[in-house]
View (cartoon, rainbow, N blue to C red):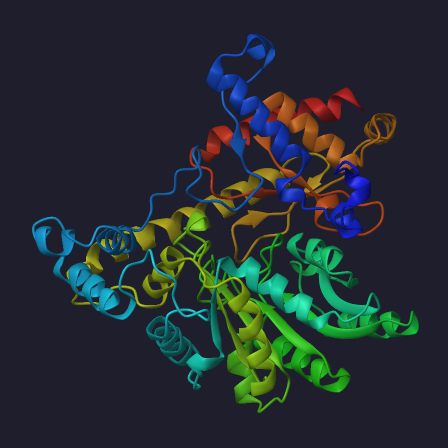
Amino acid sequence: MPPLNPEHVNPNFLKVEYAVRGELAIKAEKYRVMLRTNDSGVKDIPFDRVVSSNIGNPQQKGLDQKPLTFGRQVAALLEYTELMGKGGDLFPKDVIARAKELYEEIGSIGAYSHSQGVPFIRKNVAKFIEARDGYPSDPNHIFLTSGASYGVSLMLSMLIDSPKSGILIPIPQYPLYTASLAQHSGTPVPYYLDESKGWSTDPVEVERAILEGQKKGIEVKALVVINPGNPTGGVIDEQVIKDLLKLCEKYELVMLADEVYQDNLHERENHPFTSFKKLLRQTNSPVPLISFHSISKGVTGECGRRGGYFECANVSDEVIALIYKMVSVGLCPPLGGQIGVDCLVRPPKEGDESYALWKQETDAIHQALARRTKFMTARLNALPGMSCAPALGALYLYPKIELPPKAIEAAKKAGKEPDMFYAHAVLDETGICVIPGSGFGQKEGEGHFRLTCLCDGVEEYIGKLEKFHKDFMAKYE
């Protein structure tokens, strides 16, 4: 029997790259362990803590966004059901009522649920979508998932039937898409967002990408849109959504709408979120649409509970049956995540005992994210060789860096892309872990990095980054 080594595994495994959990995140974790264990090398580390600005993980240690009380209390009662009868003085009445209602539908969360997700919770998701958009939603066309990422990967695998199957993806994009395409032998068809216009999506550019892909013999099958954008924070307006739906109809494409940041809006009044589903129905578009949402983002931030859903619109019952067959192979999504989804789509209402605290907590998170985003943008834009488009949504900034020729030459000697070289230096000198633009995609010759707006103590955090950047630029001047 031959040994198990890279030559004996699926070659697609070797092609998969996922920057947000790649070499910089691994290096940051090594630093974190050294600091925690007081390793002998600690004396040579010029910082006393690692700041995980590489990934949108709000409750991660060091970022410490407080979980929303309502969802955690409901989860606690369903984890230990005896508290429903004994915890009258510990839990608000509406929490106990919600937990009892869910228990009647679910039973023990230690048991498998329906493979598509608990029917009662899917009905609640449908009601949430109907209230948001003003159009009906069919719970039988909703699939609860282990986070949105599972649904994205599943839908991409369904659409790819040959290496010539092409999926339009925004550049910059979230690396989940290129990683999933590599895993399933699909071909990315890039379209570029316009940085000069706040990372806007231009339907003309999308059509250019479609035609270019077709000239190369690629069967372009779907259009991915991330709204609000990751890593850019751009928010797509209604007219652009309508134009994108028309393009999908013209070229017979499936629309994949990644809308996990729909509640992360920093200028909600001037730049609101509009779902693709709403305008699909409003325009009577026949385009097949898959929309994704998650409990990991928004103000919930429950990344580790792995909860999400996708809704299918204009998708035939035959295809719904095929999707069900595939999800049933995994038995069911995690019950803790499904309960998180129910709390996401059914938060406390005004008049409920839990409402005041829920409103206080969610308002504080929204305000903190908006404040940090604007503060960080202004400070980064004041640095030499750096520019940062304002982020209207999501959890990140994506500044552009123009490095001196000597820094670019040093990066080549080190065998690194210039922005990867820069990101390593940021981590080594400050303990701040950022992800370079080369991990998200960018135009030839450009450099960027993504950092989150989740870090408390933002003045100190940005102060360290400012000092590093000025020293770095002077070093390679």
